[in-house]
Image (cartoon, rainbow over all chains, first blue to last red; front, side, top):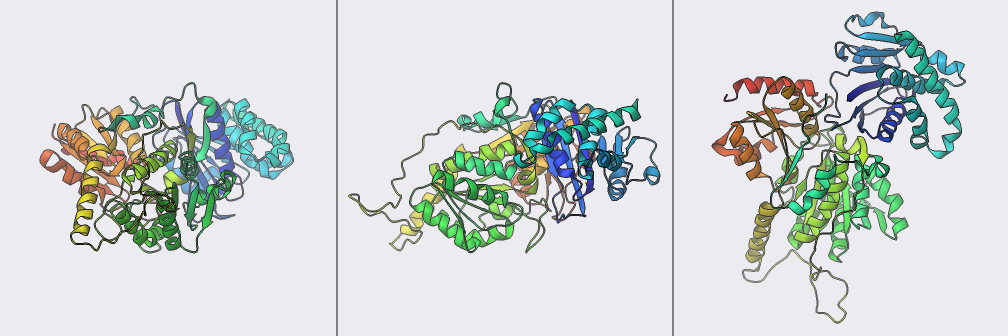
Length: 183
Length: 386
């Protein structure tokens, strides 16, 4: 098993935390993982991306040219990375902010999830990254939802552990909505 | 895609060191001990595990996680963390600390490493151990912070004056950032030499699982040269100045002999799918990880391609590479620069194989994807002797 995903959005959407949490969960499940953040002059409001590779054997390249799954949280990321998704791959989009019409690809599966709306309904827009991650876990099967929930303790500093139940709910809701779209 | 064969680590006459590197993929039974950390943090943890209690440095991206970690941890261990006034100050503090026989280190990134060259040369001349980590930037001058391998010449050919060499280790994973830092401290003490760990923002900033193995203890000589106060013993002097008749020449012959022993005993390299390969791909550090996936993809297409990775850049694993290249007949060198290690590859391989080069100059977006390297492999494979 080898799964790779590129998660992209703007700074402040929690893209890097999502990548970290996914990696912690993969490690918890005994897999090998590499988490590679785009490293440049990044800032709040600018672009934020990370690549996560999960494998039973050696991870190999932490750099992925054509991701099998792309998770995009904003329009700019779709425009920047949409063409790179591997033919036959999957693109999970935050349909609250992203219009996929311009992508013009019929060789990949596009799964729209209204992530902003879901997060806001659950009480806090900042959980948009957890909704996205739940959707990815459900679609890819890379890690179990329960492991993601358990890994929150590792990925979050102790002062934020009080938000874990709300984040678990966001992960589960993201997973549920994405599953319904793919059913 | 799953790699069909785990990398085979090859140690030329240094088998006792293989334990760590060879174990990195067999994690069964140790899962509870797996951490998830950045490469930079792993190197800092390795330094602490090696018994280093003294760090001197000046912050610079993309290596600042190393001083950040040590500034937090060393005081707890009754060690000393000093943010120096400059990189030049830091390397000379390292020189001073090492002269007393303690394990100490500094770290920086390309422009800062340039500033340290005078101190490194003095340490090489005075035969002082010490570990220097370069998580390099890209290009000359201020350059950029992107992943790049443009400091190979500086690291391997003696960045400072006087014709010295220091061992240079090139990790390509978070686990190796830890393991090779431990190894660097041993080499430094064993050979009384500065040792450099050379990485970039890929190996420094990426996070992977880390098993902080305790290191098998290597027998190291007593530091009978260390200046620790005269006491009842005789005076000890640590210096790189030799004024007596013939003294300096003898000193340089001795240094030369030491480098020959390193070349004989301390080469480390790793091979993947090389046994039946008609084309050997070679690269060090971050780019070797990308190449490894490209080689696995080439194998899936039925191309007989293998990967040879130098882990030590000095001493360069000449014999092992010449052997692998001799079987294949063709070598493709891949670097994140416009051609540096390729010179050592050509020297090693001689007439035994044709050598070609694919490089990406330093700069934003210079990281090739596995697919791009696969494309280069295909083109070179067509020209390989069948």
